[in-house]
Image (cartoon, rainbow, N blue to C red; front, top):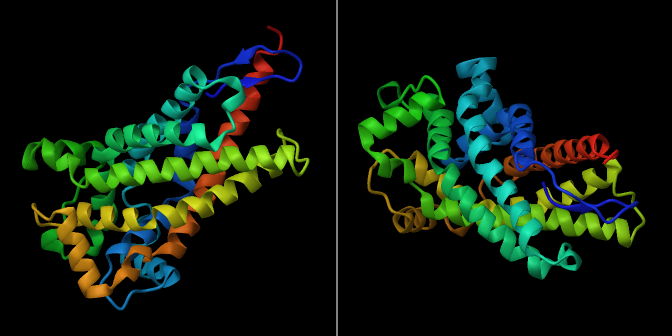
Length: 296
């Protein structure tokens, strides 16, 4: 993934580009019920329910398996969005940044923003299907799309609505991808570096990875909330021509500016553990890979 210099030599260790995607898939499977509740909350009618009441509603209406509605789309999203943004971020760091600038926020932010935009574009079709599948059972029966799985959803949207529909919400998704990657991976890298250099943490210990990823989850949730809410509402809309501006103005008029942070708690309840799991998995994959190559 990203380059790291071992303590015993100056050799550059290159990690596979797909580590971030694997971490994303593991985190996705574990935290999917929280993500589902977050999406339902962001599109729910007022008065808005709480996180726990939404989970109870899902269990009551759809049963335990209902908590994993749209899981295939979520996994497809990790295979595209998360793999692309993590892979691009580390590729840019590895090939374009000077070795002494790998922990500089000034240099890392542009890398993360470019990577986030690429990830947002690549993952947009899966994101459209993901939002629709997670919200499907919340609609009246005659409005449900009833996709069998993520691939069926992508195929049907392409055939029935055209390729442009797979790019619905691309603007907010690009913004969210940029904000998410910049806030998540940069805050993780910078926080981890400061924990090691300032507070004497061991860079290889799980508590270091846990602490840095917890901070990254808090930062990412707060910064990304407005774009996430707007993106969810656009992608879930049944009308074919609802622009970002129309959704934004309608939401502000009906709910006030506070709508942009609607679902913050469930967002963090999902993104916090998700971020922690991603980086814990990635760091363990890195550690395993370093161990395999120590003899070189």
